[in-house]
Image (cartoon, rainbow, N blue to C red; front, side, top):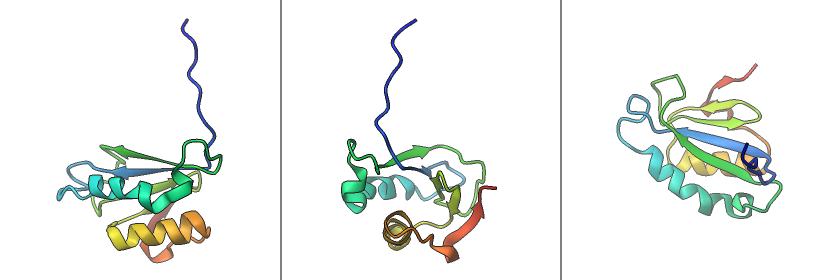
Length: 108
């Protein structure tokens, strides 16, 4: 068996859906590309409070997108645009207060 990979520590993981039904206008990838600048130090690989980010072709909702989910909280956001993405980073990821009016689901 080959050597197991290693993972640097992180605090949160966000996924943005770029599936064709969720994101027919193709906005998700542009939002994803803006995240490093918005996250700043929180996006650094060696930061134990790092926020990992990823694109996924399906979150299983297929509407209201672009969608984004923040784990481990399991907070699901809908209709993400530039302004909302900035608010989510500042209010939820930095200040710990989810953007309530943009949430459509919570895990659990």
